[in-house]
Amino acid sequence: MDNDGGGERSATIYQVAEAAGVSPSTVSRAFSRPGRVSDKTAARIHQIARELGYRTDAVFRAERPPRTQMIGLAISDITNPFYFNIIRGAEQVANEAGFSIVLADAQESSDLERAFFERTLPALDGLVIVTSRVSDTALRGVAKKLPTVVLNRQVSGLPCLTSDNQRGMRRALEHLGELGHRKVAYLAGPEASWVDGTRWRAFREACSELELDDCRYGPVAPTVRGGLVAAQQLGSHGESAVVCYNDLTAIGVLRGLAHRGIEVPRDYSVMGFDNTFASDLVSPALTTVAAPLRQLGESATKAVLAMLRSQKPLPQDALSTMPMKLVVRESTGPAPRAARR
Image (cartoon, rainbow, N blue to C red; front, side):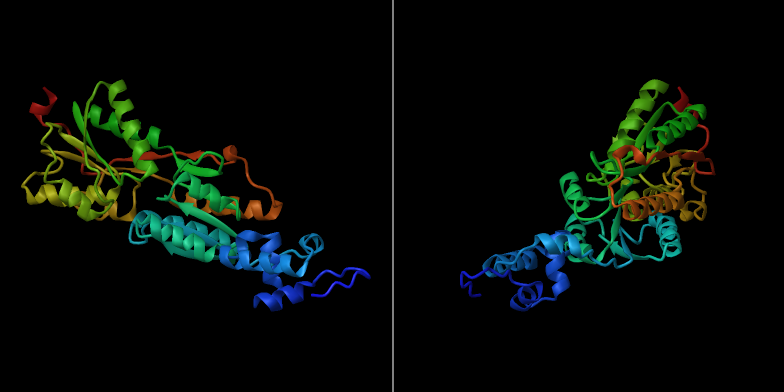
C-alpha cells in the first residue's frame, strides 16, 4: 500500500480479508475473539494486518461476533451409561434456551479430547467438560477462550460442579460396617481420573474413622471388562467386600466372581458407584451410591448460559457440591462368619 505523506490511510478490514483469503468477519474475530479463530489463521491475519497498516482499535469495539447458539459437551466415553442422564439434562436446558448441544466423545483419550477443543472451540458459544482426562493447565487454557464449566472434577480457578464423593463413600462403608464386614477393598478406576483419586482418599479416611481394614486393587479400565479381569484377584487380601470405582466395574466383578463360583452376597459383597440404569438390571441387583446425574447436566448448562448472558465468568465457588445417597439392593449382605472374626 502506498503512503504518499499527504495523510496516511489505514487499510480496511476488507483489504486484510482479501489478502488473507478469509472473510471480513474472520478478520474481526481474529482481533476481538481470538479463541474463535485457529492459531494458524490468526497468525496469518495479524501478519498481513501489520504489513498493510491495518488499525484494529475501531473494529474491536464496532463488531460483536455473532453467536452460533451451540454449547459443547465433552465426555470421556459415550458407551458408559454414567453419561446418559447428564447428556439428557444438558440437552433439555439448552433446548429450552434455544441452543443446541454438540457432543464430543473422547473415548478415554486425552489426545482425542484436546483435538476436539482445537477443532471446535471457534464454533461454540460455551462448553461443559465432563470427567476430563486432560491437565488442569489445558482446561484453564480452554476456559480463557469461551465460557466453560467443568463437571465431575475440581480445577482451581474455574467454575466446577461435583458430587459429594466423600459423603457418598462414607455412607457406603457405614453400610458394609453395619453388615459386619471388617476388611473392605477398593477397586480403582483410571489413574488420570480426578474422581478416582477423590474416592480413594475418601475410602481410606472413612475406613480409618470406622475402624475398618482397607486394601486396594487396580487401577482398571472403567468398564465391565475391567471389573471382570479384576474379579480374578479379589479376595486375595482377605477382604469380604469391595467398593468399585463405578457401576460398570462392579457389574464386571459380579460376573467374574460368578465364574469363580463365589456367590454374591453370601460369600462376598459388591458395591458400585453412580446408580446408572444398569445397576438395577443385573442379578443380583447392585447396591450402589447414587449421583444426581441429570441435575448435574442441567446445572452445568445453566451456568454456561448465565455466563453468556452476563458476559462475565462465574466465580469458582458459584457452583455447589451435589449430594449423593446410598441405594441398597441385593449385592451386599452380612459378612461371612470367618470375616467377622
